[in-house]
Image 1: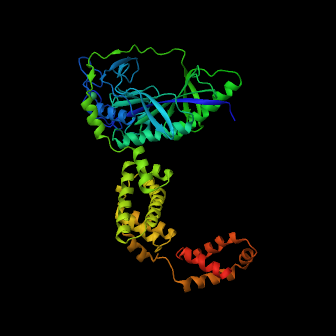
Image 2: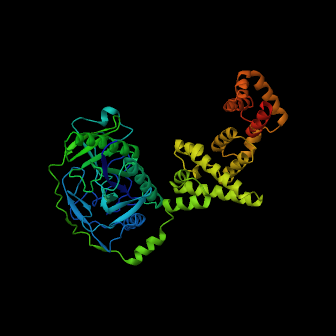
Image 3: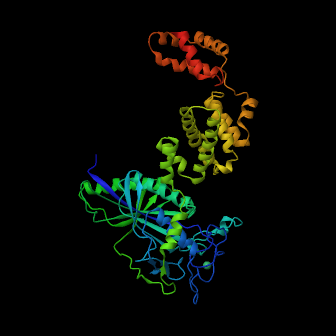
Length: 500
Ligand SMILES: [Zn+2]
């Protein structure tokens, strides 16, 4: 075991979902094919133009802050962060320096509290391209080694930068927080939060210290270029190992920015931090400070939906489900709603038929398994939500009912679900049409069992010699012979009677 532990902090840029950009009326959709189409005088920084703050961006920024238990500023202001880069037409970025919209906050990640330092608003920069977009172009027309192109469609897009305290103690914990954060901003409809599309960009600060040490290490490495949560975890794991090795040799890792290389799962040095940037922040003179009233904050607080963590707690209590299933269900709001719709159908049926609470709970567990297993895999494969699948909650509930009543086996359930997903059909119809109903005819099952026993004398001898574990193999053979349609419970019972 290593004597060292990591100290990890995260900075996440979240692209807010608004109709227009942060300070002008240009559309906020930078992933369009034609460059420099969603632009105007303001976001291209032309002289004499004035920025105007997007109220929707401010609202969403505060709501995310409230969800992260941040203190909302009473007065907030914008500042100019000065630097030169070709994708920054004004020569400065409008950001927030000392009076961010959201101050300190905290969230629970697993059973540990993680501090939020701040979450402030800022505008995004444009993009440099080394190849022209446009599907109508031939590849020889797309790029020219002498040229770099600039696209300002992204310039001025609203970002919320969330900065955490260096509170994470493992890559997995950082990954868990990021998944939680993504879920929260999606619940709030504050962002699409698709990492691959650049809606969510993560930078990580990581250093390593001796276990028991309470001071922060006197160096810090920043890691960039990670485009998935898995990549963040891999980059952090690699860094922890690399830095620990250096420290064990008595060397100190240097302050630097490193980039993650996806195919090797390693990081490489991009630049050292010897020349610290001086951005010469000063208050943005074209935007007055904003006073946020208590009434406004209260109004937004009331508008907050039930958030993933609260929903998870309620599901565990109300539906008596294991925590791991619950997190998978509540991660996406519409998926959680779908679960509740099916659960309520099941509830109505159990009530009408006066079936015991135990059986109801068992059917909920089965529902959770089917939803988070086969169904979720199909949705992910096709990039669909549960509602878009065309599979109604009524029909899903009926499928669970057929399985739980023993009308069809689990194996048959899989093919019924596949068919329902493909055609939106009714499960009972599918069972009839495909002749999938479970066989509970004892005579028929006995016949198959006799054949299986005759053909597997060796296994039977083993069983009789006390190796009762081989029973499973015999059950499996019977199921195979009946195309998975024999009632497994009956098969077990009859087999045992015959063998004992
Ligand atoms: Zn504009």
